[in-house]
Image (cartoon, rainbow, N blue to C red; front, side, top):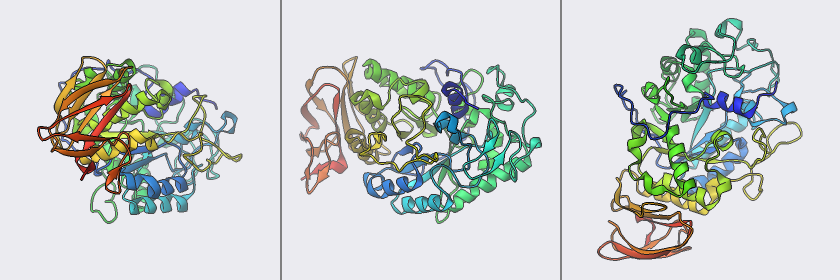
Amino acid sequence: MRLSVLALAAAVVGTAVVPAAFGQQRAAEPPAPAPASAPVDGPIVQMFQWPWDSVARECTDFLGPKGYGAVQVSPPQEHVVLPDTGYSWYQDYQPVSYQLQSRRGDREQFAAMVRTCNDAGVQIYVDAVVNHMSAGSGTGSGGTEHQKYDYPGTYADQDFHDCRRDISNYEDKWEVRNCELVGLSDLKTESDYVRSTQIDYLNELVGLGVSGFRVDGSKHMPPEDIGAIFGALNTVPGTGEKPYVFQEVIADSTTTAGEYTGNGDVTEFAYHGRVSEAFANGSPADLRSLPDSMSLPGDQAVVFIDNHDTQRSEPTLTYEDGAVYDLGVAFELAYPYGTPKLISSFAFDDSDAGPPTEADGTTKPASCPDAAWVCEHRRPVIAGMVGFHNAVAGTGLTDWWDDGGGRIAFGREDRGYVVINREGTEMDRSYQTSLPAGTYCDVMTGEVSGGGCTGRTVEVGGNGWFSATVPANSGIALHAAAKIG
């Protein structure tokens, strides 16, 4: 069966309802215990639909050396195959079984990727689909013949909720959690059998070295069900630590993000709207007090400028916006709120389109020189700001300046300073920082190499001031680890 992109966006992100207005104040409910922040120094990057061999190579060649902390990979379990839709991206979010055989590779390739990335200092987080199975019948990517509500060797009719119709009222929490998203068979996650089956699958991944999980469609499951499943997981080999968990929740008047923070971090969808709109409209000065307009404290929030869903359903700011998009991601990596998650995606004109595909429906190797793969993570501004993010970790916001519109500058104590010019003309002025005096590489235009800089250099005086001309729609970023001489 063919599902529209808007319908499948609902299936993947967890609702078709637009979230509550951006800028709302934190809910007046008792706070849940705060879990630890992501156990990585660098940001998370979602390598959307990248095959396992390509992810492994990128961990070694680029992600590890540049300081990325973790990769969020697409679901690795067996999924439906939809040749009639051109192997759309959303087929991967309709599980058929939990064997590790997807269009991106088999179990052996997946395990090799995890080992390679861990050796490169990059953790692997799996996109975990545990709310539902498929919307129809057919043969899965691993050869499993299945029907809706009947998945041989995995689930049978009794393992699914009795509300076998689409969700019609998103103000009814019971319906949101028990009825079906666009026809996807809704699992009884309260069932001991369903829970134990999913725990076995997730623990297999942990045993292979997977360090964390993004929980897909979390608002469609009670928090206690998620807690029972992910709280029962084994520790990650060699660490003694439980896997990192962050849950996809689009908060609305019925479901708040705070309901889920007892299980782990939560995606703060309001951030995407607020920051993306500010950069798209040329008003980043409005972001000075950004945390006050979010629903979650920063140590519980996973934030993003765009993800695979918003690229298609809310394309406020995406890779197609060029330098403006780069500046939005630079802000995400520079401003002290939340755990930043970036995306590396494939190009598309049809929002239902899947990744570059072989004739048999398997995914072609990802290659950044190939225009079919966007590789946002390799853009010079974004890659440079990963190092900035890592260098300023743990510091607060200082030395804020703005012009009331599209031009801002701020520091991260004595570790870093960033200038962003979102206007259409260049900006020439001086800036007060808390940086020690010296010569710094501007990591938006280059990097430290051989004791010098491949891009622009900036001289900071003994009083913390520097002067610079910043071209239109560009910026400057200085940090202590990029100080030379």
